[in-house]
Image (cartoon, rainbow, N blue to C red; front, side, top):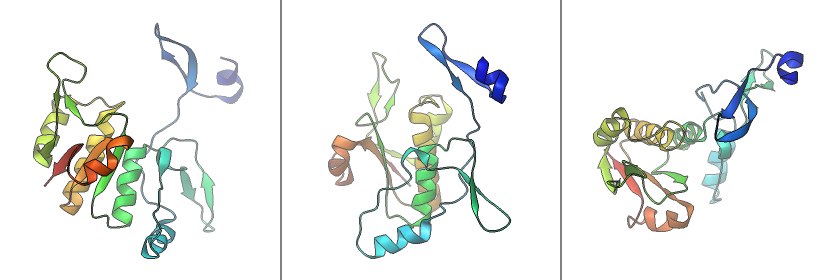
Length: 176
């Protein structure tokens, strides 16, 4: 309450009745571009494995003089990952999460793992509410965008299963 009054912050109780505490609420704008995309592409051309856009990256705005300033916001990591995949013209979009696959009816007795689904099926499941916006929803949205944009595959899996999933043996694969 003190920071709310002193600084004009918007705050919200974390999870009333579940967790204690408050958090500052900031906007989550759609990422427009990857500022260092040329550097990333140069590194890739040089054979360097690049790991980038973790946590969504640092939100900035372009000033009139060509410099950048930080913005009080948070960028969704999956949407930023899609923008990076576009910037490097990726052959495949790998989205890492804490589960091996996406599921229908997640954590319910009738949950069903998704192996390979078409982009149309992914859109249908998303629209039906199978993927929560605080967890798998943004991953599905980003994966769908990539497939629609590129005509190429998105793979969603855990870090532990990434190599196997890229080889086709695990994960959820969204295909055209």
